[in-house]
Length: 251
Image 1 (cartoon, rainbow, N blue to C red):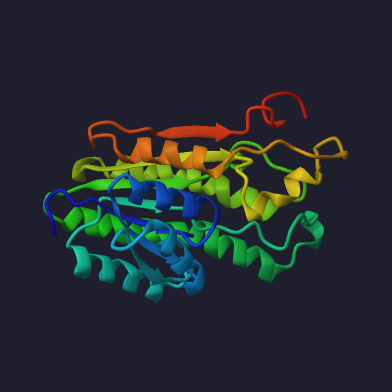
Image 2: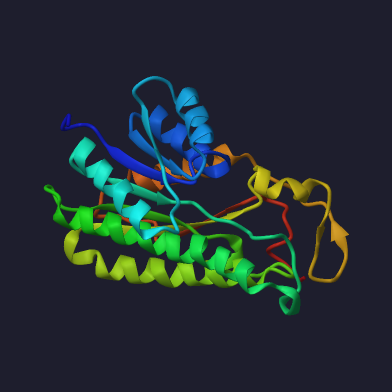
């Protein structure tokens, strides 16, 4: 590996925020391992990044064996890991009242958003601790839902609150090994996942209203800033949101 080469893993890299972050990192000179369930979508991200900037490693982050294989491949190909952007996530079947949420749907959200985030962070942590020079950075994708829920979002909201605890623990436990961990909490980035915002979404007062969105590239630039800080500095938590979304104020 070139001494100047910086290696990143981005999960959920086939679309949305993951794709935007992967392209922004690669444009800034990072080599990016693209992880996600859909190989074709990863290839589309790789094509947009250009030759040599990325490698596609299809991975289901909720599967411990696939996560282990992902980080083993990164270690074997590049010799080290400098950044994990822990981005893969799912909202689940859509807004569902708590009394109607199926157990299997609950487990799917928990397995991806929380267990998957933990598995990737654990594997990255092990690699960063063992490599020479030691250390690296983990950035977890939280959400505005790590602070305040939307109606009928109990699984998503619970997992995003849990990600905050994971971020704090990783940040503390990583200190002796120069492993920095921060979290970006995103509100209304324009992706397939948030497409319904423009047509109307249930509000806390029972009304349905359209909400403003922002470009995913605005999020990606924030992640790049966090990623390129020296390991002696860390953005512990950052909130990036559409300016006029109904988050700051009364519900």
